[in-house]
Image 1 (cartoon, rainbow, N blue to C red):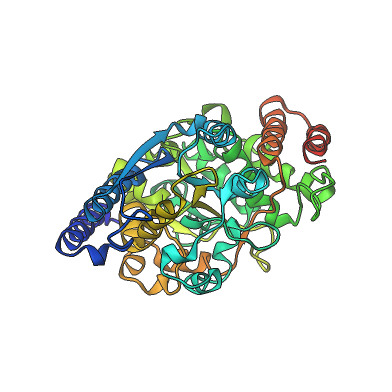
Image 2: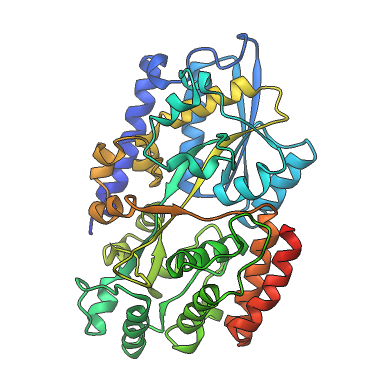
Length: 436
């Protein structure tokens, strides 16, 4: 790869060009010149989780927006990742939440939409006559993560993440492995992992053990491939202890514990730097997302040179399944500034090239793979292919409780040696109680 420093410079250049463009003419900045409904003073509150490059770009774009719309003030607040889910949901539930939120699609569909906490998308704020017209600007299926069961749209993506795999090519060579022949299956991840451990790379592959959201997304990545489920299609019966779901947990148990290719007790749990082990050269292989790599490039450019992004290993190579997940900008239903809030979101969404070049966020607009920042992505071909057959998770109401039950089951299997069937039988009872 070896393009980290040039890439960082490119990102800064794009930000500067974008800022100059907005200074030269506000029309180029999107969002119009009237951020409020009647031109009066408007204060918008905007909360996000913590991801340093995202925070930096948000601050830049907020400054541009306020300059273009002098009657609008955006009060931006970040929340530590370990507190983010609970604080945001509590605030919106008790009426003290912000006007604009940025939330993952599992939480949107599992908590916020069922609890009637969000306002439907206002297509007029995007300069569109209808939601259908707005949807035509995005690739097929991209907006499904922000819809309810009836198809009502409640947000647009700040980031749409497909899933791939990163390998440390130096570690591979140390172990006598050919980096050009990465593992294609999870069995091969285990086999390669044993060789990496023998070569002195003791943390060859680890899942991310940070919080229930991370546990859930890693488990769902495998679950989508085995064809298992956490609940049935109507979300009235827990199914996480059924054979395909148990097979999923067995894959996790083998990789994390039985095959001895890493020690999960030693995995980093730093929520603001979830790829710290890969970035520091401690870990050899990891499940990654587009935003992962720029963060590593900035924090550890020397290690980044040795990393390569390859297709996600599969349970069945002949039937690949790639997990999608996203974060969406959405508006608090209790907000008194909904029109202004959607205009601000519309402005943010027009900056898709900056989001990709500066932060590594892909938003899935039509033709994004042909954009200049996309073609400048390291490992572009792998990423572009990863977005051709993605699948969002199935999500049911009260999803945060479901995720907590799943995390508890994984912890029992990985750290206490409980059999997958037994751990998932217990989780199934908890999940049934949550969704019924």
